Image 1 (tube, rainbow, N blue to C red):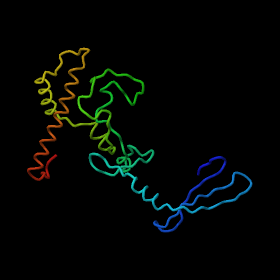
Image 2: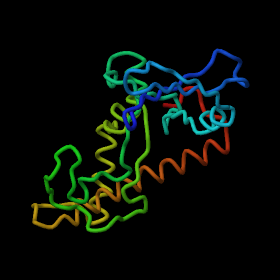
Image 3: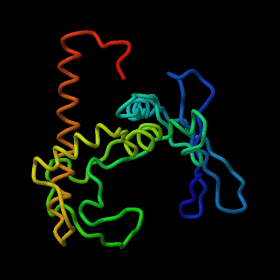
Length: 199
C-alpha cells in the first residue's frame, strides 16, 4: 500500500490463471467519500519480467541453493548451513581496512593488489565460508614442507621488523601452493577417474 497526495493506492492480483492475471489498482478518496474505483490493468509482461529477473543464488564452491532468511545464519540446521555469506577474494585487512571494525586502520600488508579482483566478492554457504575457507587444514608434515619452501624463497624472518614485505611474500607463496596444487589435481582428473578413496 502506498499513500500519495493523501490518496491510498494498493495493488492485488485476481484469482485468474497465470496468463489471465490482471493488476487492480484500488484507489480510495482521502476523506469522507469511502468510494473505491477498480481499474483493470494487464500484468502479463510484468509477471514475465519478474520471473526473468528473479535470481536463485548458489554456493560458489559446493553449489547448494542459498537463502537469506533473517535470523537463521549459522544455526545448527540445514537452513542455517545454507544461508548465503559473502567473502572477499582478497581480505580487506591486507590493505589496512576492516569491515568488522569500521574506522579502524591496520598496517597494510600490500600497497597494491598483487592479483586482479580488487574489492570483488563471491557468495558461499555458511559451511564453505566459515568452516572450509576460514579453517584450512594443515597437518605437521604440511607445515614442515611449507616452512622449508618459505626458507628456500628467502621469506623467513629471524626477527620482526617494521617491514611487511616478508609476510606479503608468504601470503603470495601460500596462494601459489594452492593454485599449483589445484592445477595438478585438475590434470590428474583429466587423465583418470577420481579415486573413491581420495581425500
